[in-house]
Structures are given as C-alpha cells and as structure tokens.
Amino acid sequence: MTTPTADTALEARGLSVHYGDTAAVRDISLTIPKNRIVAFIGPSGCGKSTLLRCFNRMNDLIPAARVSGEVLFRGQNLYAERVDPVEVRRQIGMVFQKPNPFPKSIFENVAFGLRINGFKDDLAERVEQSLRAAALWDEVKDRLDDNALGLSGGQQQRLCIARALAVEPEILLMDEPASALDPMATSRIEDLIGDLKRHYTIIIVTHNMQQAARVSDQTAFLYIGELIEYSDTERMFTNPEHERTEAYITGRFG
Amino acid sequence: MSPAPIAPRGGRFEPRIAHRQRVGRVFHGLCLGAVVFGMLSLVVLIVDVSADGLQVLSLDFLTNYASRIPDRAGIRAAILGSLWVMSLVAVIAFPLGVGAAVYLEEYAPKNRLTRLLQTNIANLAGVPSIVYGILGLAVFVRFFALGRSVLAGALTLALLILPVVIIAAQEAVRAVPGSLREASYGLGATRWQTIRHHVLPVAMPGILTGTILALSRAIGETAPLIMIGALTFIAFDPASPLDAFTVLPIQIYNWVSLPRQEFQLLAAGGIVVLLAALLLMNATAILLRNKYRNEL
Image (tube, rainbow over the protein chains, first blue to last red):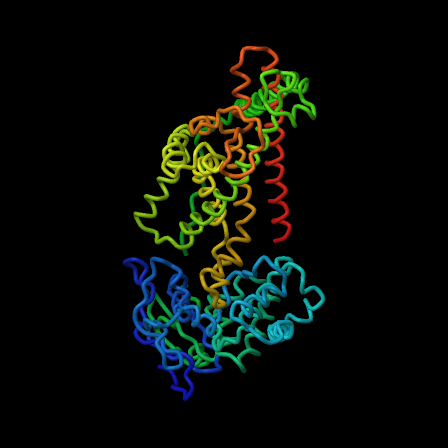
C-alpha cells in the first residue's frame, strides 16, 4: 500500500484501540516515513485522532481506552512493558486541536518543557530558536513576559508548536491544528508545517481534505476505525484505489 | 426533486401575553423579597449587637483577661486562643485537604472504592459538629493524651472542616481544563510536574477561597470545643500548642449564660469582635483569589 522507504520514523503493527466494548481503531498497520508529512483523513468518528494519540501514548490518559498491537519507534515497541510514556512524549511531540498555551508568560510556555526535562544550556537562546522555528519570534520578541493568553488564536497555536519543538522531538503529531483558526492563520500554520518537514516527521490529522492535499506527502484514509487506503497524497487525490475513498474525497459523504 | 414542504397553517393560539408578563413580574418580586429578607435580618442583627457591643468595645476590653468583675473583663485570652487554634487548624487542614483532593482527582482510579470514599466525604461534611467534639475528646484529649490543649482543639476543628476543604479543593482541581494537562503531558512532564506547575496554580484561587470559608466556619464553632473541655476560665496567654485555652465563641457563650446585664453587654462586644474577624477572613479570601487571578 505504501512505498517502503529506507528510513522509517514510525511503524504501527496490528494496532487496535477499544473504548470499553467499542473498537475505535481496528487492526491498523502502516509505516510513517522519516521527514515526510503524513495526513490522516476521514469522516468524524473514524478513529483518526485516536490513532494519532497512540503514537505518543496519549491514550494512556483516558482510563477507558485499551490499546493492543505494536508501535515501533527506533526499533522499540512503544507499548512494551518497560517503556515510560513520559520519555516517549518528549521524543514524539504533540500539537492539539484547540490552542492550549499555559496561562503563563510567552517565555515560560516555551521554557517549561526545557526546564522539566533538565535542559542545561542557554534557556533564553533555545526559547528564541524555538519561537523562530515556529515563525512567531518577530511578533513576540518585545513582549516575551506577557501572558500567552493575550495572543491571537493563530499566534497561540504557533506558540504551542514552538513549545513542542523546544524539547527536540523527532516526530510531531498534529491533531487538526488549524481547525479552530481563521483562513489567514490556517495558511500561516500550513506554511510552517511545510518548513518543518526538513527537520521533523509530521503526522497531521485533518478533516479538511484540501489541507491534506496541500500539505502532505502521504495520506491515509480511515473509515469506522479501519485503514481503507494509504498512499502518496497526489495519487490518492487523483486516482484513489477504493470506491469509498473516492466517495469521501469527492465530497459525496463525510 | 423532492416535494415542497407543507407550511404549518391553522390551529388556534391564545398568547395571553399580559398574563405571562404578570407572572414574570410576580416571580421577580418574590426573588427580590428573598434577598431583602436575608439582608434585612443581617442588618437587624448587626445593628442590635453593635448597639450593645460598641458600649464595651475599648482597648481594655481587647487586652484584659476575663474577670468576675464586668468592668475589668476582656477577651484577651479568647482572641489569642482563637488565633492559636485557627492558625493550627489552617496548618493541619490545608495540606491534608489539598492532598486528599489531588489524590481523588488526579491519582485515584475511577472505581467503586473511590466512589465510596467520595460519598463518605460528602457525608462527613454533614456530620453535626458535636459529634466531632466527642471524637476529639476520645481520640486527641484521652487516647493521645493531649489534654484540653490548643492542639487537641485544633485537631478536632481541622477534622471538622476537612471534608469541606477536600470538596472545595476537588471542585477547584476538577475545573482545571483537561487541555492544560494534555499540553503538559505532551511535553514529557510527569504527573507530579503537571500537578505542581499547572493544575495546582490554576486551582489555587478556588482552593484558597474554599479553605478560608471553611476556616470561617471553624472560628465560630463552639460545641466541639466545649466537648473537649475548652470551657474554662483562662487568665493567661497560651504560649504553646499544649496549653489550655479558650476561644471567642466560648467566651461569648460563657457571658451570655451569666444572669447579670453587664455580662450581656460584654457578650455583645465579643460578638462584634468575632464578626470583625470573620469579615477580615472573608476579605482575605477575596483578595487572595484576585491576586492569583491577576497573576494567571
């Protein structure tokens, strides 16, 4: 289904998630190539966010969720017994649907992840680098001590990206990062995602098919918890293999 | 092409707008009446007590010990006793209450045992204070042999308000948005780091408000302290947690139960001081809450 690459960032094998008796994700296997952008698309409730949250063990925080199967990261199964989710989440960062900056200063938002992970070098320098990487530095450099909640929605989301980048993750998970933003802010975030590809592997969940088409290299289409199709984005949007994929991307349902 | 939808037509209406508006005005009046009744009672109480109490209120009244002679009687020991007891109650009840609340909200598995604990905490909040007095007498005064001391009284009152502190703190912790916790965990924070840096700071205004309101309940408590034997004549300053003590409400109760008119005035003076202390505590609660809110 997917073009195998020499460098694999992440690999799911037989991954399923149950909430109580309901299966939200059913037996999904896929490979995420390094330094690419992979989009997960599908109608509401198809399990795309749940699948994304398997990759940094965020589902651990939901008591009712049960994960089975394997996620391989650097050859190690993230769900093996000895793996600490705290360590996983530092290496696989996350940006959420609704911008969720801490109710602290802009500086402290970025510095928090560094402090808790025992960052020993120049804090201010790293905060600046992170804000630059998230294309936010010029807008906030004169008010780093202001409360982050005073920023606009789009700025808050870029701050959340800067915060995630600061702790040097290899992979960035983005759960509908632009769905709460206006078109201008969305386009800035999309440009940023394109820039970040050079250094990071990005998996983005989106309900916006144009967005998937614009930003991603590979696209996975999910439907009721199953992976229906996974291929190069261009191919999926021009020549989908499955009838249901075609029906979804042409807007006949979803 | 689907057929055009059938527009709703026909059927009688009887809007009776004047009647509906009248009912609305009546309800408005009833609600206003409820406020007026409550506030008026409070004003009457304050005016009545102040009329008597202000006569005896003086520096001497605040700095003298209690006495058989009304002219020389004061509330020095009661004020110091209340200060001692309240400080200890705060020191005991705050960490225990916040700790229990954080455990129940952030750590406890959501199972039957937790629900049982939760229900019982709510029940404990409704237990009459005299029952805590009996508990304090049996456990702290006798079993731990603390005697009729400040510490025994403070432990008893701390137990009394602990359920209220726990419930208030739980509500404050629960009100912290889950998105903040996710943001913190997403950066590789541990549970403790998330609680320490994000949950507690955001919940703190609510926790403080709840705690101070619980403390202002404790400062007026009389029954449990009488139970553990604080109803004694004290003519010295309590200097350690193991000293005997009296508190303002007990001193007031003491005076009210004496037949002479002069002592009734002294009781009213005590009430004015107690009300002032209460007002001060509630004002502190509001100030603390605002301070934390502005820092966020």
